[in-house]
Image 1: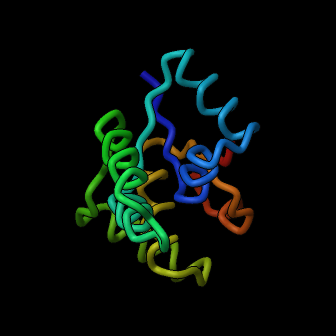
Image 2: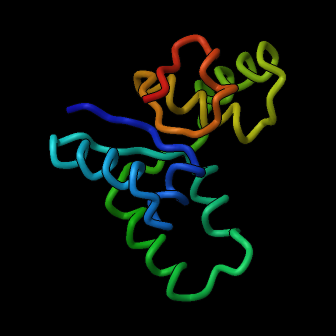
Length: 122
């Protein structure tokens, strides 16, 4: 079973109905791909400004359909290494480290993450 990690911006674009993101994610889901996010993505989604109760319920329901990974010691250490090397913010490093931990396939609009060793933006 293939698992692809999603960045916060990919999830937001999916919920906004951005056609290329919806096609990519739905197409992969039809092929049996499973999706995962870091708990950091969950935090970022649920703290979006102007989030109403319906949006929150949709996000919470969607999160039950994917894997949500906590930050454990292995991910924290990988994130620290990424943060040192790439000079990126801690939340971005944690999300990227989660993707590396799960095999490296990652959907994101954040092009600066392309240079992270072990990460493959798709």
